[in-house]
Amino acid sequence: MTARRSKEGHIAFLLTVGLLAWLVPGAGHLAIKENKHAAIIFVTIVLTFATGLYLGSIAVIDPVGAKPWYVAQIMNSPMVAGLGHLTRTSGYRVYGRPNEIGQIYTSIAGLLNLLCVVNAVYWAHLRRTEAVGD
Amino acid sequence: MSSIAAFIMASFTRPENISVNPQSMLWLLPLVAAIAIVYKTTKLPKIKAAHFVKEVTILFGSIVVFMIVAALVLYVVAWLITE
Image (tube, rainbow over all chains, first blue to last red; front, side, top):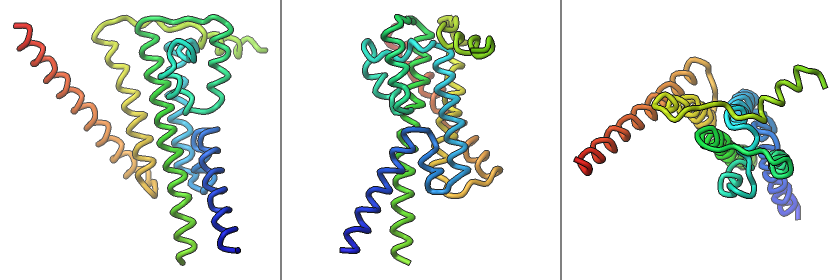
């Protein structure tokens, strides 16, 4: 009974770490007390995403016309959905090279955050299993 | 809303003017730097400044060199096909 509760708690902890890492880049690493990792991840991913938005404008987040790119972009944070809604309702448009470079920057930032989410969950799992092993 | 905040927000609603020329390829460099930094952050269990910078620089250089080699190979293949 206690072992089952412990396992459920472990899974809940891993889900919390994953969710935090998705909500704010680096927050997952902060939750497992990897402060340096968290700071580097936050600054790098936010800067990459902001650069993409600056180059191509918020119109690069297009949930209707560029769905595959949007899937990668939303890995940055669920807050990207708000920007997507704003783009859809306000009629912002971008074409050509600024669109390409903006989409590439924002999508790569999202995929990098996905890597960080997986990494934070993996490290959280390792820490817990090592602690139980001790 | 202050005028500074409005100016910052407005700069994200108008795209920058980026021409289609060879210089625009340089936009890949900040992206490669971001990839190298985040990848090495996830790989190194302990971060020491000097070691981290060295690892990131090596990965950054490796990616850039590989991309240059790939570009040269593609250029030669295109030249062989079209000539």
